[in-house]
Length: 320
Image (cartoon, rainbow, N blue to C red):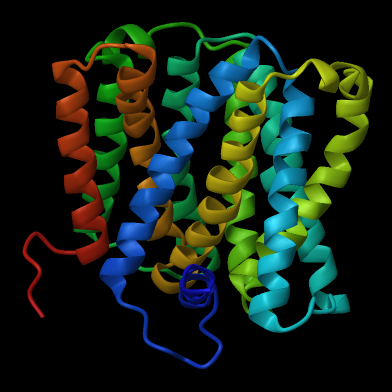
């Protein structure tokens, strides 16, 4: 009972701020960092699944698994399953279309054509597009120090991903794979910005729950065409554990905490933590897949940390 009370207390503290309860900014930063680590782990889980579960089937099952605890958490926290308002339904549909369906479609299509490292280099540009879009759409301020912070953080992610060979990656030709990943970036940018609008009318847990359900419905035909109902009986316990990780840690906790960060910090600041994703993926790959940690990784991690600090404080020294 104590464990269950703690869990739902954490969810209330993490997901909803309807009564104007103060939430410590340091805790939000910590949750965003954990989200980046969880999302870094999805690369490991995805790699373990890649030879055994088809991509659309994996995506569909991920969000079906996520929908179960999300619905339960929403019911326990809200005391009911909140009805969808007419003016919000369209935006929730867009969330499922952009952040769940389109992102997965473009991401997996891109990974079929280019290496994961180069794909991560393109995805590392998420914060730049989100910050620029937030500046024009939501009038979020971008002073010189914040712009420097964004550039330093993105450059740090590039250094880590390219293992110090920035010139070699940037001089390669751009093909269909890069374009697919670029469209994945645009899908995630749209998901992030639409989420800010949705959370004017509902909590983060509601937005993630209904977006996951919508995305799962949209992914179902593609998963069906891949033969999911035939292959599902051949999945191993390790496959199901990876799917559970993707569903619970990568989606339930990751998406909800990310949206909480958007609500409290704004899209540009919250999205900057995405740059920790490739770095955490490389570290987890070292721990679980025996891939080496290099000097370029440590350099990139330091640059990302500095960039996050500069963008969140807006000054070289935090004077208040």
